[in-house]
Length: 627
Image (cartoon, rainbow, N blue to C red; front, side, top):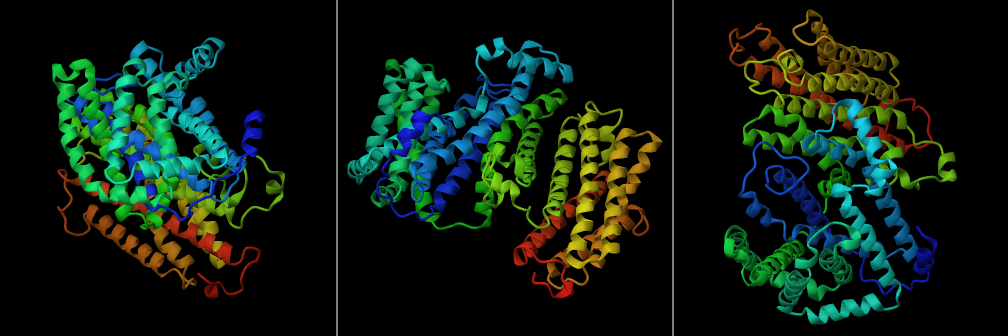
């Protein structure tokens, strides 16, 4: 951070802070708004506006459909982000807040601009400008982007512009905060001005005014130094959110008028859509259109904040905790995954419903897979907007480097790979099916996704190869975890060997795609169906894992039933040429997905044991260890 700004911030005198009680409703709203953002970007694939890549299917009615969220979604996010910054100020000095913002926002921004965004830009260049594909084409694109001429044109940040704005608005707001009593005076004035129905009326008038006076001249550019309408809108929302935290009169009035706001939004939305659709919608210099737009914008925001405050303020829980931490990595990853998925799937010319569903699944599952992977790797957590583990500072702290690593940390990292491997496998299969026109799930085997008839066999073969390597590494983690929990060396070694052989079979089979006879080396992977029994054997002395043991037993029984049915050992004819694919899918889901669940449970158990005895050595009687 520049030294002059740091000196100014250090001189701040914090205003009196309201109660620092956590507002779970704002967390829920933030998570929901980012989820809508992903859906919105998938929608843009089918729109007629300029976007990075488009489907072969585009629809004129998307001009009106995007108005469902477009007027208010980002404004709401900026408001909630401002409120989140205020909560950071309750127990921190201005310098600490500024540093926390810098460490949370700048590493992901730099990482995204250098790694994530160039992938999107390269795909867009291939799509619109005929840029070469392949590794050579991507390498040439990176040289082009980060050459002197490329940097002179600016570094594209694409969807990461939001991070740039949040960082800039945080600096502005902290500088306002440093002036003694200023935020308190602004907050008190807002509380007085927005009493009663004015909580609806005055912000709507403000939004209409800037829409009429600024939008025709500046539009929305997402370029920080020339985006004055957006600043009047988004910076205003950010500072507003910062100021109203703890001002209960404002929140009570939003709760009070939430139904009125919802009714206004319900009326404004179809009128706004009609104004976009009808040629006369821009009559009278666009003033009526701006009025309806501003009305819808604030009415929806008040309705969401009012209902959220009323019903979600105290509703926390593990699901919200998980989603709150996952939101930033999902935001960083989703657009790169989506753009790549469109580029890969589009040649298949799938029906629009199947294609849209595929893009949604790939984007969400792929983003969650990224989150599940990166959150377990301490060195890269800050690059994805995650706080360092165990309170360790970043990027460097010599004292932190001298501290011994947490107990079982290597085993837990291997188990983390076991959690991520099934997510990768499912995502790869979904992508491969989407890229295979006419693939019949009822009659065709999964191996055909990587065979000669597939249009993009590299999706399946490459993904399964990586998943096989991950399964082998996870197996080592399983074996070491069993040894750590029970001291049974033989059981741990046997479990590891079974997983390594299974992973080797998966990876090796992709080197000889179907129908090459050598592809049948994949049968080695079937040995993993013995792993649940081996884990039961290894964990037999642990009396504190009853649910995991029941899960492993049920998994083994289900796999055994599927095996005898599909091999026609019982009920001959049940599995036939018309449905064999569905039976194989069911078997594959059970065979793969149980590994992730078991790895996650054992990871939690190792973490708990490490917390209970952080410096203890092996325990004489593993059966009596606390669970």
